[in-house]
Image 1: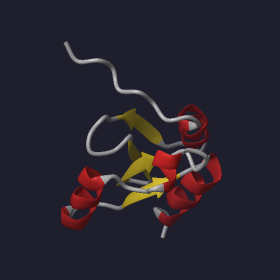
Image 2: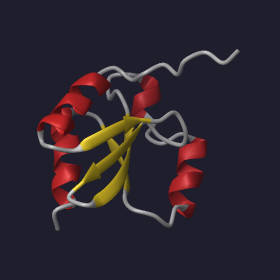
Image 3: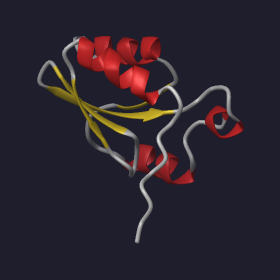
Length: 93
């Protein structure tokens, strides 16, 4: 039996900020944490805790491989509600 994926610290605040702005947010486990829909566009987000050694490393090997080969919408790394909302604003461009 598979254990539930551990969620990143601060992820809940990021999701709440995105939803408050009007985005649709779905939790994923692989290849990243969040699927975002906003302004008829789609974005993938990976949440990292900048205060942890794991979070400071950025994308893990699997995520890096995915990012290099992904041909869809933006795939970004965020570490706070502010950084997530900045990425959301890019979707308006």
